[in-house]
View 1 (cartoon, rainbow, N blue to C red):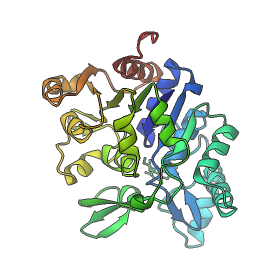
View 2 (view 1 turned 90 degrees about the vertical axis):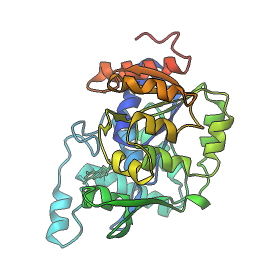
View 3 (view 1 turned 180 degrees about the horizontal axis):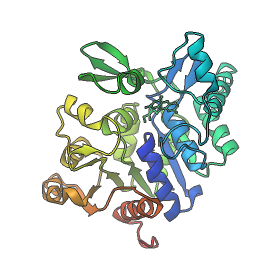
View 4 (view 1 turned 120 degrees about the horizontal axis):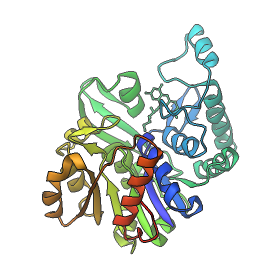
Length: 314
Ligand code: FO1
């Protein structure tokens, strides 16, 4: 079993590579739910939906989120009625949020909903929310503390980050199957997701860090920072707010006691030595997932770094 700790868009694209190298039924994604948000009475679960819909082949590829070919009649009328329109919910996408909210109200868990949706949509990979308990990532800014999505989407990250809070994390329990998957894994891969508010949120769930430290499986991360910049999203300001250098070396130091190896981009080759000095094995390659072949390549290099590359052609 290959376990992948996943956030949103970058992780979903990485998983598209992993399932080209190993059979999808041998892959389980442990997904961040800290971006989950209550909006208009709906429970929205961005990263779980992004991973599920990407691997089901129904994602809007250009955006990385939302449903391909979706329409915006609901949003248009929501605007007419004076409702919130800052977080765009497509008409097909809306079905996910309404159905999830209804199932949760009936007493189903996030995990049960994730499993029903991935089977219904034809996603071949198990999607395990990190927890069935409510955890929300909030960003501390000079304009107050706000939900991550308010910071990321409404304010387009254009406000200074003073800190990050994982509301509810201390009381959250890993969702069913998460600790077992990590314990029994042949390898644990940390996708090129935001180290702080995607992977960090997963690590904030009590028990998950310990499981990663205890597993016999190699733990290999892919740096989401290339040449000091993030391919997508606010990893740089969030790392800086955590006193971390916004670089592959900063990522290595953040994951230091958790990972055996780090995959970094060719652009950061000069950081291999200082990262190795931290006791972390380094693999330098092209990490930009510009097309399916590049996604496959990155996955193959990462699996090789986890000593599973024998039968992975790349
Ligand atoms: N991201 C945006 O930048 N703007 C949006 O309006 C938006 C809506 C949205 C709806 C459903 C969904 O599953 C994701 C959505 N995202 C949107 C993406 C989301 O904000 C981020 O990609 C993740 O939370 C970060 O991993």
